[in-house]
Image 1 (cartoon, protein in one colour):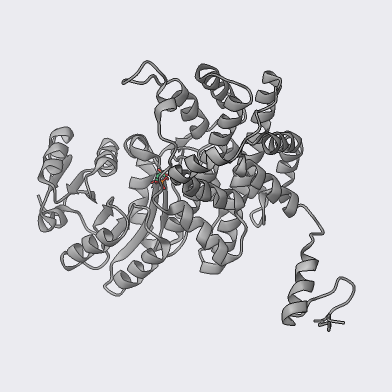
Image 2 (image 1 turned 120 degrees about the vertical axis):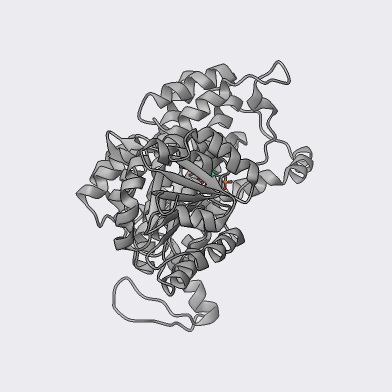
Length: 469
Ligand code: 6PG
């Protein structure tokens, strides 16, 4: 059947298969393509009706089956494979066709591909897709960037397949060029921060409060019923409830404490450094994955140094403080990520609407949380808000939880329980909200050894002092 299918998808791995089934469930005929014959067969079988879902290993058959302008989404691993797939498709496409990269591609790769394809009259979208395999099947949050005109062709399909928050689709056109990939990258940076925070709170509850896995399950479940409601808190509570198949214990206790990473958190940190925007909660989350990887060294070092035995605590009070501290630190992680987006928008000309971004993160994605409804409102009220901490709606939330964060950080420091995400969040808060920081001394030092000059508080101009007497 020529030129009849509404949507094409290259890469029928778990994400691709789930996404294309979701597209078909929403009334669009879809055609898949993968080099792996088994995956093609499996999709046709699962689809049931080839006029609704079909697939081929042959790129030409695949392209010819699609209605023009063709809408072809790639769900293949980021990197060289994306370029290879594009190279294979280009000779088969017509002007006006649309390629959408749904992977976690680095944003400058997306800019390069967009410019390359624009020359050939082909529209290219970088569209972050969040929500894992289940999200792809039942409704992800989608973050597309590219040509606004071409988006009109993709919009009905994306709006139909995306997650819904109170009926509103969790997808929106975000901006030109790599805006979509950039937003997804920062989403992942925030994801790293939230995951680090939930894990270190687990550490303190277990080591200081002596909570069992059953109690941890109940605690995180209770938090998920309150203001901390979020996908990550919810799955954390379920993780504590998981029995192990291989032993009589709980699975979480048998999992090696080395966290892997594919790079999106690191990119967020690296690019924040380039922009000059502080995101310490994200930075430390990346560093902690790196420290976790040094298991052998950590084990040796553990034998060389003593650690205090955590002092007794009131369990109920610790749980309450932990809830407040986690809420406080979650706010800091979102504030830092949003701040980075605001700055990147200026730097790269994305013209991002931060309220719209918070809105499409309210459901479907990994960082979905009740807090995002408040963040959406804060940016709606003040679209040019520089930082969430400056939003009147957030002042009370932060003021009422910061003391618990202070107490927990100081308990962790005294008792040798590392709380790097929480303490960095607190330090970020204390520094960001300080009218005067001691960096005057750094300016003096720079001028002392390098004649780098300094400015003054009391008069305009650039000054230099001969410091050496
Ligand atoms: C999502 C996730 C996803 C990411 C994984 C793994 O939004 O669905 O962000 O895109 O690939 O979370 O990331 P790391 O391997 O870097 O932890």
